[in-house]
Image 1 (cartoon, rainbow, N blue to C red):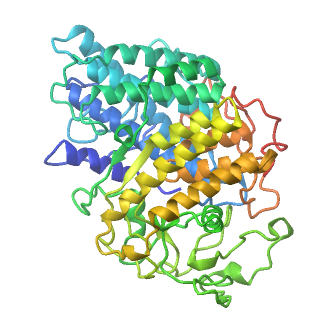
Image 2 (image 1 turned 30 degrees about the vertical axis):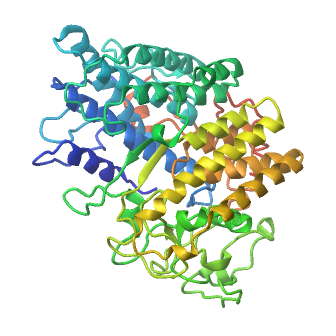
Image 3 (image 1 turned 180 degrees about the horizontal axis):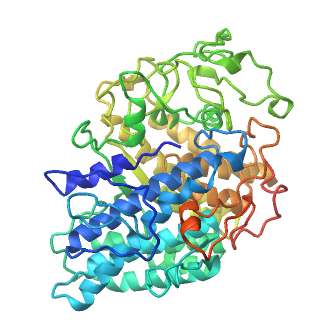
Length: 559
């Protein structure tokens, strides 16, 4: 997994307009109880909280996307490729990451700085309710996510000097505690709170938007626990993310140097030596087979054809061992008829688990597109990526978009007709947002872009297919469209996949027996080493409390 935190760091540095910066050391081992020595500036404290949170969303989205085939996962063995260090950074940033962002700014941990803000709010002379409300919202969400990824989290003893080796609380307890924190945050986020010079990376100080975030986090929590009455109550209240104006996302810029504030995927793919990232064969095949208009925004093809597949003109492309070694390999039986290597129409990516070395294909592989990374729109010109091309990297990191919430309403719907209606509205909102990014690429030829009629036809066809399907086919259509919509902000895909087992159409691992699908990841190893109350697990089969499905390896069925 590529570490992208340095790009998130640069966003904050740019926004607070500092004169100099220090490299943050995210490798120091710090327990959740170590508090910042000097953390008196509430604005810097909140900046640090937002920075840590943004870094976590980047990491968790990547992991979730890779495991659910929305993004490419490297490795034939799940356990060996998801070591204990996988979530070390997420753990430290949630509690108390060491080092400083700039000069004498506070440490990066969310809890550390939340506690400092609460002290200022209680004992200081200025109104920092907004700071505390936002920090408490982000901490609550972070706790929920730790439960989702490792099944438990430190809460009752975290941040308490009396407990230098805090225990982990069980998932249900932490979920309940996080909902309590959201109640507290909502009470603090009143219309009369003072912003006192705060830098709000997400909503520029709009308190109403933050209350919608609070309720939206509640909604995703009720989806996971199946609490329909609580879910419906929030929807009835109307204060949640329901339009693109409410979307919870981090905005990137176009600066390449001092600081580099571009979308990290853009920075990895739009370079003088070509693209670094591989795109997921499963997602590209799914979108190609469905003729999904969003594929021209999600992906940028640098070639008309991929070795061993059919090119954009319908001609067969010869196998090429140097450019794509797997094009000469006979697919194993468990990949019979599936996209083991090449994808038609020039979609040059990799299948789930492919652990081949990297050939000289930087100007051949499919790069990230204009959505959400701020790259190039795929107009069929098959040019190459390069510094500054397309949208220059001014993309977004989606966290919770209004389209996601419509799919959640579909998940919680009372019947198939209601679910179909939310499938439609979710796709409509997704299409509108994704297509709006096309304007970022001023040099693209939009005569080739999907038309309004194309988009309407696609949505009509998907909804009609859902309505006419039964059983697994119906569930797969809904899940495929949900996963496709989550591209760029994939965290909830991992939850949905373990909650339902759908879609069953995802590609298997390259390895016939990659080990059980990870129901949770290992406890962060850095914390295990420094915390005598913890013992590391020996497998990835521990289930989150809301995952009541059969034990591994019987579930999920596609694995």
